[in-house]
Length: 106
Image (cartoon, rainbow, N blue to C red; front, side, top):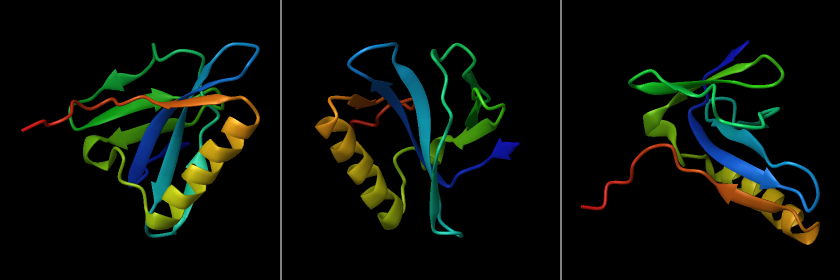
């Protein structure tokens, strides 16, 4: 399956014990929905295709992450993402946002 979210964030989830995992939190504006990918233990299969990144996940789903969609979550998806961060912090799990696109600091 190929997923083409309208907005997305790459995160590294680090539990107190065990390896960190990289996941995509994605937003789909037309459906007003969100999705958290199955993840991978490294980012070695992430490939830059010019206008987007392609990244296969453990489940076999391949994410097409369009560069203009990074950090562009719907309000609903952003509220869900913030709740996930909060719940992880309570459980002692660290969640770090991993930017893929260079920031324009002009």
